[in-house]
Length: 576
Image (tube, rainbow, N blue to C red):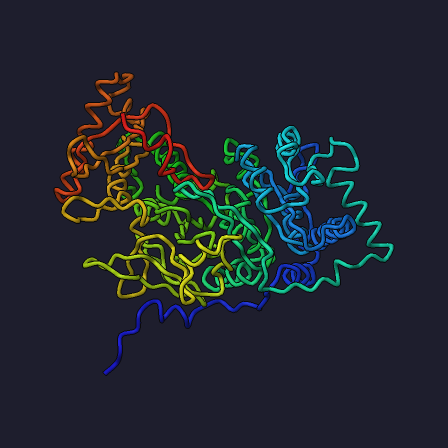
């Protein structure tokens, strides 16, 4: 009798072929050799003209910067990088991680937090945007290392401390025989990347990654999502985060593709028409905003008989109109876009389906900084819109202690799993057990191996009678309504009552509510009444113990992490 072959098992026979690399220097030299004169980056010069930087020039810049860093005594030292996504950031990251240990830091952090991370990591040097460096220099007395070396990405700073001068200095040294950079031998299994997570539960930890961790992850990703040499990756998410760094920077460099950096969220549309990207890494929030604008513009431009208020009219259009709409949408996104890679939180499957109708693929995945980052993903071969996909090559996951519904903690094993937390054996032992990494995320796996994320262990709400409520599930139903922009579901306790009640913090979509009221600006009472009706309709879809018992309406958006996850702590959790 034939045994049923799961889709996860079928996938193993379909992987794209990859060429093994286990460290960044090997990857860089290989790519520069194979793709020498191809474009690695598209950047704007001082006159705002788009110019191309070849793989060969990229390699040289890294060698020159690295040579200068070695000459200044930073071999095997911690070197921090901070700033917005840029070519100089990428050069600095690779030079720092080949010469020493790179410490990428979030440019949005408060200066005190940046200094704290520099002190904890014992960074000796920092490269970055002048704006970030200036604020650190102002508080220099708080730095443990008073001899910290600052290198600015700006050419407006004094010569001896800007990156152009440092590279020129390195070029002279290299051409005069200081070829130490070429001779560096990297142990692929030692700490070379130190990242500080600022997760949605508050306490940042230093995650220790090796170059094998990250190289294994980019090879696994290439195995399930083919990157073409003709692809141009449009880099929007912050590069200090492993998601963008591994998949939006190192993966295209391994693959011979090109990269262009977004100049800021308000420039997304303009930059897309300038650079004509084919691949974008994004978070669900960005995908939702693009989707919302596309639906809005469709309803504006279509003949009246095809319009649908607050709904996507595409599926009901005749075939000749569908073709016109597809081309129009594609052109507004630069004309070449073929795939969105989506991560950091769950995406509404209807949005993924809508984009597919427009011939735009959206591949959703799941990952964590501690896993370099990808664990599972939808692929070129198999897709399931409501899931986080299948295990990536060489990585396995399983559910520990599943409940009656199959939900339990997701644990992961593979070459992508971190070395541990920096100088924190206690927390490392809590999460790394018998070779398995305990993610702290809750999920379930179906009979085909597809992974479904149901929430965070820490955010589970437990009722008095022992029922588990995953707030993300209730939030999904709330956020599915166009009249709500975003929500956060909490378990609260009332005085003299040991029962846990479900409360929702809701940020309404005022624009959609105004349309709903046929153009009149809503009063506070009207907003409350409309949201109350939405909450009632959501409660009808849920069992009694998951019902929302109260809600607060927020005047402002929730505070978010840099990957646009709502923080489940601090001001966001204060109920009225």
